Image (cartoon, rainbow over all chains, first blue to last red):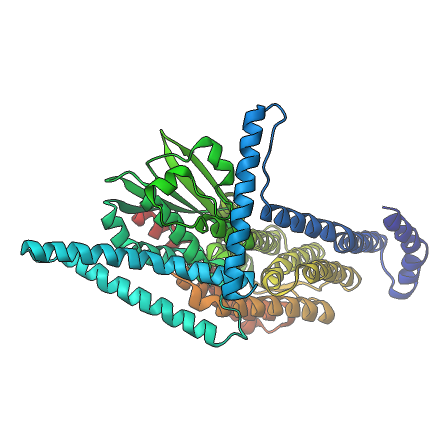
Length: 350
Length: 226
């Protein structure tokens, strides 16, 4: 404000009389010119304040928020019972020691790169679903043959699609590992609908084995492109959908809702079935953490998929949340920011 | 005499208002930054069209018309600043973008100052308005508009292969709008020949009509899809 007043005084005292003397301006022109000059000075002042003060502050806050999201917090209320506190402590000690052992195992086989660890886990998870599907499909085909019946054509198609998927994944991995100068996955515009379509195709055999179906509800005519690493987004969708298939009630439907809100795409995966126990909810995104129900239904898991899903979503500046109870089932909701392609496309799709 | 320029500018204003209203509604729903910029840009330019066109229907006083022409040019320049900022938002670093944004608004203030010192000599000739802005103002305003439109065309071209559904057609129609409005608008700012002013008015009208058509077409397509 002081700067604006200072320049106004200078302009009225020196510049306007000079303009009047040299350009023969009328009083109205002089007044308008003074007004424009004040507006100009105000623009410079506000611009300088935004550049030097407000933007760095906003940037700092968003960085803080982003980093904060990377670390999980566990609220322990002082009013909890002593027995409960010791149980929590016991759980934390157990998780920490299991985590240390796992990290040491991974480090000894892959070096100490966490990126490599993520790549390896992502790839092995993506390979697991088609392989599990294939295992089930072959046993189903064998049973059909033993009965003297013709194998189900849908299963045969699923089998060849799973084979193709495994072959593609291995080729992608080999190509990525061959050229280690480039990052394996890079940020670009990603079509989530396409990713979702691929994941649903990949999970078809698993869905058939679990006697579940997947339904996609698209709430907007246009789902804009998001900014992300295609492979990792595929992994996130894959882990949420396969989890819903593993733990959903037989004969029910897994619903994937995709919608476009504000500057983000929102995806929700819902299944009915056993709820996550209340005392295990806080640890659901922790490394090597598996709920007792999950261990009972699918003993083969490592407790890495949801941990990695959470990490990937945070790295993409998105959010992940879940709600689970025995009445409504379990719903995982993720949001991912729209890319510049997506923003432009949404704005010209009228 | 039938004021051709006035009516064509009012028609342009109506076309652009429809687009602007459409973007306003969508911005309220999605808070998409680019949609917001398109709304502000088209809002200011449509207001400018009305300020250009309406006064000459009411009066032919050559002391009043240049005042409105000046106000319209500044309003137009504010609108083009928003068009300018759409591609810059994606291309520049956030902090550099702040400099560009305030720099462009400062440019508009400079344009207004020059306009006050050298006012336009607007006149009527057989239904066509000769705006006759001073050479500095005309050239500066034309350069700002043309660069803004060129950058928008480059932006649409860059994203073209990622577009789907209605967006591809809308992108083509927007490119047509930017090209024809750029050509027509530039001549209105700097030119003075009667037949070319008529042609530039038609070019502006067809260009802005393209964007209006895309809005209407999108609305009809959605109606049938529902």
